[in-house]
Every structure is written in C-alpha cells, then in structure tokens.
Amino acid sequence: MIYLIIAILFGSLFAILFKLFAKHGVDALQAIIFNYITAIAIGPLTNIIRGEVAFSALSTVPLLPSILTGLFMVGGFVAMSSATKSHGVAIATIATRVSFIIPTICAYIFLGEQRLEPLTSVLVIASLILIFFSKKEGVTLKKWYNPISVFLCYGIANFLLKYCQSQLSTNGELLALTTITFTSALIIATIFSRLQKRKLAFKWKNLFAGIILGVTNIGCTFFLLKSLTQFSTAILYPIYNISIVVIGVIAGRLLFKERLTTLQYIGIALALTAIIIAL
View 1 (cartoon, rainbow, N blue to C red):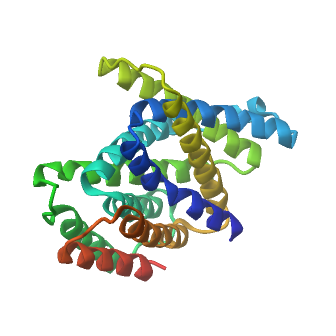
View 2 (view 1 turned 45 degrees about the horizontal axis):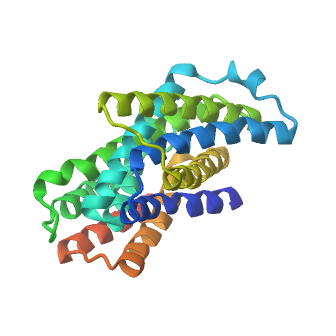
C-alpha cells in the first residue's frame, strides 16, 4: 500500500507543476526534454546504488511497447501543458485520471484481468461530456481536443505500462523499463521540438523545472509499476485516480482560484462515482 500512496503523491503534482510553469514563464517543451534527461539519469543511478546491473535487465523488457509508451507519454505531457493553460488544473487532472477506463478495459480484453462494470463506463462518458464541453469563461469549445488528447494519451500509456509490467518481475527489470521508456520519450520530444522549428534557448529555470518534473515523473512511474505488482488494474487505477482527482480539484480551487460551472461539478461528481463503483 505504501507504493500506491507514494505514486498518488507524485501523480498529484503533474498538473500543478504545469500550471506553475505557465505562471512563471517556463518553456514547457524544454522542461519536458530536461525532465526525460533527468529520468534517464535516475534509473541507472538507482540500479547502481542498489547493486543491480541495469543493462542485464534491458534484454527482458518488451521493446516496442516500451517505445510506444514513451510516445504516448510525450503526447500526454504536451497535451496536459495545453489543457492546464486552457482549462485549468482541475480539468486537466480529471482528464488524466478518468483515462483509467482505457487500461482497465484493455487489461480485461488482452490480459484477462477483472472486467469493468458497464455502469462505470457510462458514467465516465457522461462525466467527460459534462466536464469537457461545458462552456467556461475564457475557454472556447474549439479547445476540447486538449483534455481529450490528455485522456487518450494517458489511457493508452498506462495500458502499455501495465502490459510491460506483466512481463517483468524484479526491480532491476522495472527500472530498465523506465530507462527505455524515458529514452524513447526524450528522442520523441526532441524530434517534436525540431519539427516545430523552435529555438530552444537555454534558461536555468527551464532546467530546474525539468529536473523537478523528471523526479516527479520517474517517482510516479516506478511506484505505480510497483503497485501494479500488488493490485489488479481494476482495483489499482480507481483508487489511484480518485485520490488524484480530489487533490487536483482542491489544488485548483485553493491554489489557483479556478472556477468551474455547475455542469462541470456534476461531471466531476459522476467521474468520482464511476471510480468508486469500479472499486
């Protein structure tokens, strides 16, 4: 249970960090790149400290799913950065967390795990409609693709992580998985920045922001993987996500004075109900 608690604490920070990045003029894409450099460095270093050889475990990690995980992680981060700016911490957090429906359904279909209740699926869909498509001051309807992209990218990435974890067992293998995934994500994020033809002028605040994000990222990923060895997907993700949704909504209201519409509050209530039913 301690692994799950730590994963929740780390997972609660993502939307808050991106909101702070926007507030203090941090280049989110540059911070994302530094984040993956940090995460890549932490993985092997942790193995060395533990007396384990990371390279010996690399051959056991499913390569293509790990690379695809990195792709969807980058997509999720970029989308979250945009969603946090356009919709706020609460909405971006909820978009991330109700995505549990994707890995839960996929784990049932492809891995034979516990199935998701149909009512849960209906409530999640209803909550998405109310939360994402309710008009809010400062947010136009054409920006709906930001939270939807967060939902899809995080959902697919979490299933791919679950699939990879199901093929592994030791801490060394899990850390090797994070190393491959984050290396893939770094390459993809760098290519993405080049395609945008952006000049990434170095700034110390972007580096520091990236280091903080990287520590949060690998902490959340590693302890979530450890939690997946102790709980089934249908049990873990509801507990994990309802905790982060509550923290995200509270943080958005107290720290950033975010205001939601009545329909969005109803949507949040439906999302929480769906997660509770899934327990």
